[in-house]
Length: 323
Image (cartoon, rainbow, N blue to C red):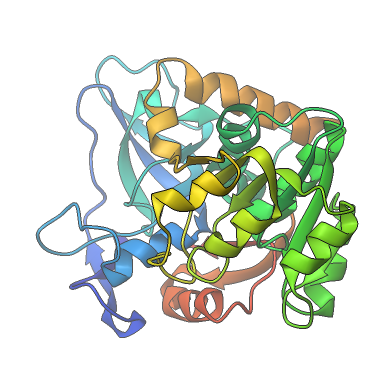
């Protein structure tokens, strides 16, 4: 038998319930995966709450990244049972076992643990497209990254630092600021006690930054425009504080600014991108240039508690759910 944590309707964490089921069996081109670790992400909250449209008409199994062991393979699959693999896909991860298309799986190198792989697939590949495609940061650039002590933020600080980029971060409270500072950030602004616009302009001698990477949304997005230099780029890739309803397209005219709103799964749909970007990510991990900070672990059955902690901003780094 296997089990999954499902939500029956959009709303709060009280909608989570445990459902026992037979171990699902693969069809052609698919495998059955026994999951060893599952990553927690804010996109899970967006789907659970109904902020993002539900892709199903009844019970939803959230979760968008994980790692496990191939147990059963379907017709036409080259992967052997026992192979350790990782993935990132919208929804379906909060389960002890799942069926998944083999072409969406990436073999995990022997020297990378299941927990690390589960914690890094969505977040690490998000950093990859943000800094390689959305705004390709280069040596000598100065950028601002919000939520610097979160799972994506800690990876981004290290990766950008390795590229020779000057990175300014924002985080809430002294502990999170110190954590971000230890993960590649040149300066970290405590948004609870400091105005990030004033501090960023002070740190850049009034010039501003070439790009802002913003996953926070409502409370930061419009103000982020104030720290961009002329022709700068605002990369909006999330809305943990809610959608920025006050933003107007004409706001970009203040400095001929650029705005992009990318999503990971548009990138993974590009032929060859998933395996190429994963190879880059694993190379950064194996070189030691990027390390994964797993700040907390929850049993999969305690996923409601994990969501509460995430939404209350009481988590640091990555969170892993253990089936």
